[in-house]
Image (tube, rainbow, N blue to C red; front, side, top):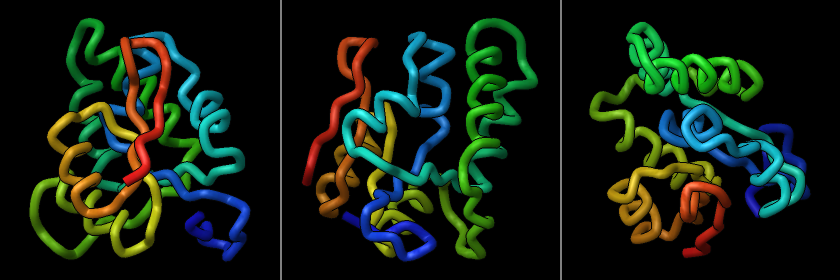
Length: 137
């Protein structure tokens, strides 16, 4: 288990991407409750850039924007990781952070999931639009 920011080895750090934070609005799942069932005590982390993605998506109309607004409210309950000075896409920043800090990532993005698993990073994703599942690399 990766220690959280406070050095507690009994708490797993889980980095959430925008896609994961939108799952409750899209599929009606209890994101934090299901992650807790999978890994036990955990610290939810979100990159500042992910909050920016959600903010942009939330400004629209319809179900996608509503899911992003709910995602923003969930992100407010997470430890926010300050923006990275390194450039590149948000998914690349997620992979770099997860690898450097040895934390799990929650995402429903198949391409990101495969990339993370190839780098030895455990991934939490949604199966059949109703239940989270953990894949250990």
